[in-house]
Every structure is written in C-alpha cells, then in structure tokens.
Image (cartoon, rainbow, N blue to C red; front, side):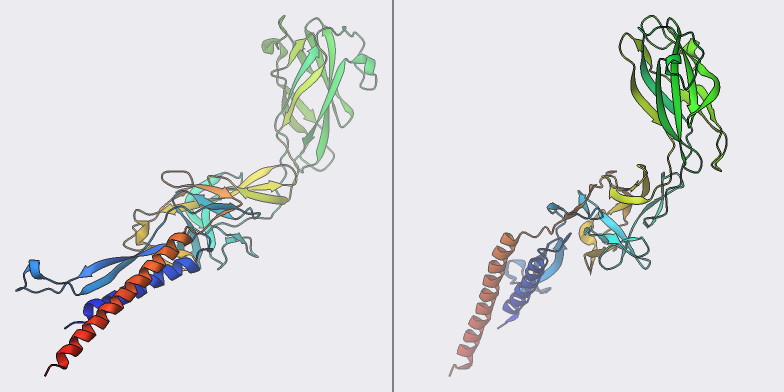
Length: 405
C-alpha cells in the first residue's frame, strides 16, 4: 500500500498554488511576466516490470516557465519611463553585474546616470563630441548637464522673391536713405563665442532682371556690394551669372574669432511680378544652451533639448534578445540573468533585427490575467483536495487490512 501518488500530488498542487499566488501578487508589477508550473508523470524503473501493467508513483513539477507575452502599455508623465513594444530586454549594469529586465521605470541618480529603482544603470551606446552615436561596447548611460557649446555660423541662405515691377534705382546706395534701395531683410548669425549679430541685406534694382545686393553687419554698412543677382526671363535665378553664394565677412569686436566669414546662398530665389517676400532664412550657428529636457525615440536615441533651440543626442539605449528567453534565470527585482539555457545575449539598437521598438513616457504593465489566475487557483484547490482524498482512501483501505481477524 503506497501513499506516494497522493503525496506527490499534494506537493505538486501546493507548488502550483505558489506559482499562481506569485502571479497574483505581481499583477501590478511593471514589466512582470507571469509563470506557469509544468508537471510530468513519475514512474519507478524496474527491469522485470511489464510496460502494460506499470503504475506510476505520482507527479512532479518539472519546471516553472515564464510567459514573455507582451503586456499592455500605459502612458506616464516621466520621459525616462520606457516601454518595450515587442521582444527584447533592457541591459542593466549593477556594479559590474549585467542583468536584464522588461521594467522600464527609470530615473536619473545624483551623478546623472539613468537607473532603475534598485540603482542598476541602463546601458547603451555613447556619443562623440558632435553628438553622433558610437555603436561600440555598451556602457552605463549618463546624461550630461553641461552647457551646449556655441557654434559659429558657417553657412547661411536667403530664399526670396523680388518684385519684377520695381523701378530701376540709379542713386548711390546709402544705408540711411530708404530711397536708395528697393527692399531689405535681416537675419541673426553667431560668432565663435555664441554672440548674436545682425546681418542685413539690401536689394537695389540696377537693370531689368538684375539686382545689386548690399550688406550691413550690426547696422554698419559693408564696403561695396556683396554681389549681383541675375534672373532669367521666366523669373528663375540665373546662377551662372549671379555667382552665388556670396562670401560674407564681418569684423568683430566681441573677442570672438574675427572676421566672421561664411557663404551666403540665394539659391531658390525668384523675380516674379508679385510683391517682395522672404520664403526662407537659414543659418547653422547657435549660442550656448542649457539642457531643458530630454526624450527617448523609438530606436532608443536619448535626445536632449536645449534652451537655445538645439537638440543633441546624449546616447542610445540598447536592447538584448535571447534564443531561449524561457531559459533566463529569475533574479528578483524584475531582473533576469543569463544562463546556459538562455544562450548568449544579442545586443543591438531597438527596432533592429528581432528587437522591438521603444516608447518614451510609458511603461509595460504586468501580463498577468487575474481572471485566468483565479480560475487556475480554483482548479489547483480542487486538485489538492482530490489528492488528499486519495491519501484518505488509502488510509481507510490500510486500516481495513490491519483490522482483519
């Protein structure tokens, strides 16, 4: 007489209830993946036994397998909350120990590192001095709060329409006499220290389809004309005759590199029978700026926004995938560890290969289905009761044998 089958059933049912209870307890844990207990039958090995008459000796829990199905994504107000939409894990560095997680609830620590609630640092690719991502060995990502250094204007452009109906002006150009030019416009350019300067341009119709362009730096007229704009009969710019772009040279007294020189391009300008109008003013310089905010793009680029209107990449969050994610070792704190069963991590940028995309200002909720868990709990309870009943029945049978006279 054996109680082994019922006892193994009780143990397996109790273990199953542990798994279900853990799922229910983590129903609100961001990035949590529910698990299920896997069972297998147990048989005693015997050389003399016949397979047709072999009775099993119970059951055993073979494994507790996580289910990495996608959880719902919820929007938050924290730009460093990041949700993975698809496959992959965040790669975290905890004092040199690498772990992996689906929980994207991150923030900055006192040193500017992006960390989770336990202080593990998010890893990714760094950037060079120009803000270009350097796809090398992933390191802990740190947000630099240093000012964005200024950049002197190296090129500028004006796209406009000059009125072909304007009358020819023969008087010598005088910046202080509005009757000596037809139209004017201005734009801001920057020196090497980030100081702004005003570049003004004045347009004088010298002949049919021909305009002279004059310039002024911070209200002081430049010597001579910058050049001439010539137009074709259809109103388009005759680039071969106009000799654009012009070379602008501005003498500075701010302590910055002087003179400030850059090409001024009028490509795309026209001369139609309509009023003067500016279509575009462009230049690539900017003053210094302080970090005002940041966000994370779908491919993991951490983009900083500065008070000078510029934006600059500060790093790129990487993801890791595994050939067998069910083989990962659970470490607690929403973390998983690499194992021989999981295979080597495949690290790359989000959206590449089989890796999912990232969503900033959002978190992935637990994928626990409470309704299903409660139903499974009832089933596990009934299984436990049934196994207890087999032990009770075995006891009654054994008691009958002992009381034989």
